[in-house]
Amino acid sequence: MPGGGRGEPSVSHGRSRPAPATAHRDAGFVADEHAPVFVISVAAQLAGMHAQTLRQYDRLGIVTPRRTRGGGRRYSSYDVAKLREVQRLSQEEGVSLAGIQRIMAMADEIDALRRQVDELDRQLTQVRHVMGQASGQRVFAAGRYGDVVAVRPGERPRRSTSASQALVVWRPPR
Image (cartoon, rainbow, N blue to C red; front, top):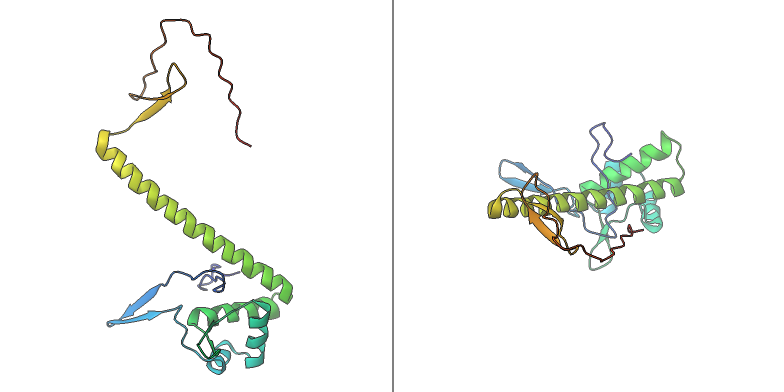
C-alpha cells in the first residue's frame, strides 16, 4: 500500500488534483519529486516495465503522467514510485488492475483528507492563537434566552429572575 512502513513514498493520483510539491535540498539544488521530467522510455526503464505497460496504465487512469503541449507523456519521480507500487501490487500481491485502480483511488482520497486535516489543524491553531491573545481561555454557555454567552471557566450563566414560559426544542443534526 502506498505510504506503507517500508520507506516507500506515499502515492497519490496526479490527475484530479496537483499534489503539493515536496522539495529535497542537496548542496543548493532543489529537486521536486512532482516535476515531470522523464519521457516514457526513461520512466519505463526506471520502473522496470515496458513503455506499452505505462501507456496502458495511463489509459486506465492508474498512473496518469502530465502531458507536454505536443501530447507527449512526462513522468515525475513520484509517478515512477507509483508505477513500482502498481507492479508490486500486481506481481507480489496478485491484485488485479481493477483492484489496483481502486486502491490508488482510495490512497488519493486518504491523501486529500490528510491535507484537509492538516489545513484545518493549521486554521484551528491560528484561531486559538488569536483567541488566546484576546482574552485568555474563553468558555461559552447558553444564556437565559437561548443565546450564546461568554462565562468564566467553572462559572454557570446567571439564572433569570422571572420564570420564563419559553420552550426550546433541540434536535440533533442528522
